[in-house]
Length: 391
Image (cartoon, rainbow, N blue to C red; front, side):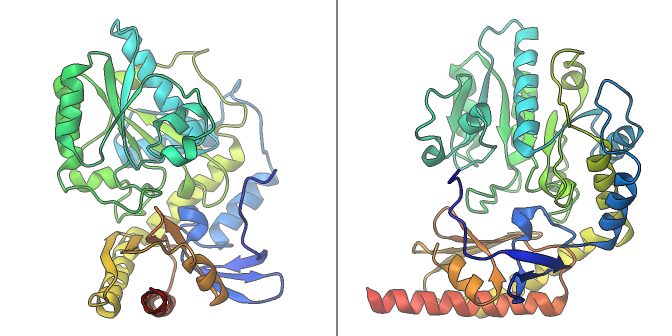
């Protein structure tokens, strides 16, 4: 099916932050499979874990105990302070589980139509429920009727959420990204999640934090909400959790952790031995190699480099970063930069129409980071100059 407007390149293999296409051309990967390959490509520890597990056992079903799944759940709960985990195969599935938890929670409180507050500019997935939760009308178009039980508020606007709470007694929770990825690397106020936590506590709502793109060290903490020293009631993970092996997770604590009972929810493949072993290896590698410290080092390098080269350039609206989530906003649409970068041997992304999004792997070297800075800066400056001439 023609779901994708694919670029005209096929990659044959990779190593660390590098990829090679079928013709042998080398590329520098500053996108990491859209925040998936946090440890880069063909990481030896992940290779070994997958190979070893594949030689023993791929799948048994959740009818039975799965020891490696329990080990992964214990480790994620240790890192996050959450109580338990449901494993799925993707971020959208993890968010579906979170939405179902919210509905169970509401019904347990006697609420007939449990409703979640979601935010504009968010992205939570492409199933019907997660599509409805997503704050992007463009990707919803054509898939009506959407799912009921959601009400939308502007991102980074506590007052708007307070007003919704005053006027809608069916609200059971708030579902939010700590930083919007598809929405343009929008970084909210430093106390945004803290105020959301307080508001949810005041009203007895669940705080559901979608860490699918921000989690697993991407922002310089294991989870982005830890920058504000709060704990959500529900947190969802995917992407970097498996470094390319499909896995999603919905974590919960307190009352939310006790809602699911046998028969409420399930997954045929979710939490299978292969995916869980790969994910354990990801966590072990991040810890052993101190890669969260590395994320913060690389973040400083990128931010300083881009500010030095682009800080005074007319047409740059803002350079934003939290760890290795980087966004460079231009004052004009710039989707063409993706193809221009590809021709220059560089993988980037443009989101929200005018924001260059960079999600480099944590294993990128300083030299490679400088190459990214140089290439991206030159592409942007040339693009802006050409746009000015054309105008």
